[in-house]
Image (cartoon, rainbow, N blue to C red):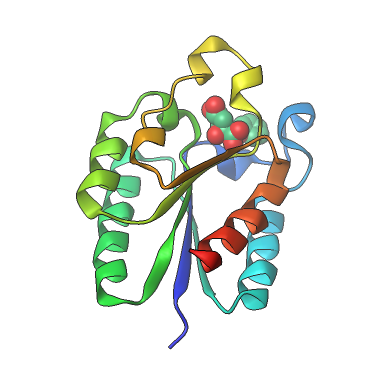
Length: 148
Ligand code: CA2
């Protein structure tokens, strides 16, 4: 049976392509979903693509992902936690608790930006970290997930 790649996007990523194109590019979240769908079909994965502005919803989805990975239906998670990256102990705990394979992803190179974006609560709980590849990071992360 085909395993699923779960792509989770956090707060404000629904605005992608509408503002700050110099930082995040001009592609929308729907365009990103399309890139992910193409990559998943190339790598024999099904795609589940979601966005939420709510921290607790993201926690619920990570817990759900842990159960699905144990059941053998999920390959892993690609998480762009948005600004919660820099604030959320709850997301850190959820990833650790779920024991899920997770790639942390950022569209921009957070290390070339403001100091408050340099620390991540997600990184110590993640299998791998990607930043600065633009929206092409998403299909690259799917390729990596398929190879784990
Ligand atoms: O580079 C990334 O992918 C980020 O995770 C994006 C977050 C930011 O807080 C992180 O430091 C880095 C912000 C997502 C908001 O995206 C917008 C896109 C267009 C217009 C407004 C917000």
